[in-house]
Figure 1 (cartoon, helix red, strand yellow):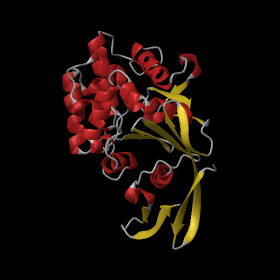
Figure 2 (tube, one colour):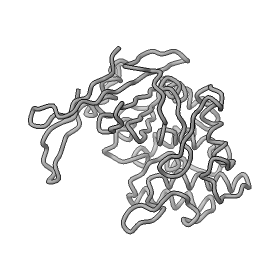
Figure 3 (cartoon, helix red, strand yellow):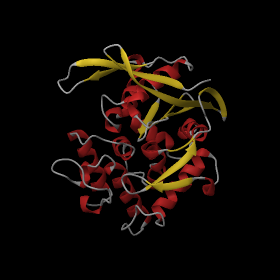
Figure 4 (cartoon, one colour):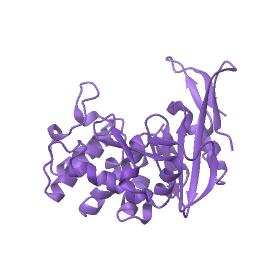
Length: 291
């Protein structure tokens, strides 16, 4: 099947076309695909539920909100920042120990969209008795644990996974889309995966926000989890099915309509994700993003 084509229209004129590759895997077998299911990409923030696995295994004292914010790419709204602070308090750790860069106005590390993940990594260090300084670096035990978690979930050897530095300073992991979907499809079967998934389902707006494709999917399709990542990467799972999507040119605005189209192959309706409004700076609708 060809890649999904998502069009950006303004005044009835097509301004751009985004090609999206996708695959769904169940019990190790591909059950739906569009484009190249073997396309290798970095998971970026779609990794966050997998990166939370060592934390869930090490810390029985964390609740659903803690595990949700550790899996989040938040927008620094008050509820999200409160969740990060609560996880730091449980670690225990301070905002100054976060090794993500400052964001927001006024800038702070707490407001970085990955601060929940970083707070979780500090909580992992405390549980294991590891030195926390430099936890973001490739040679640190935390990042070795992250690599092992991805290899376990995707059922590949660690040396098959290419790594690079993510936007927040930790490692990011490259896999074929089919292996990403496989990892998500078996996520709840992994030790700790069920706790993380429950946290994400209970707190979908902590994961990103009410307008984001991953948060909206979790509120639309009961029992499913979803996590988006930079450069148009999107993963989801439910009913034993794992899904991975990648916008070829990296533009995340195509994710919602592409996911809505792809999920039709799974007989699932994602509702209004199929059409994304295109607004100008005045809040006026001037077009749409859709198939």
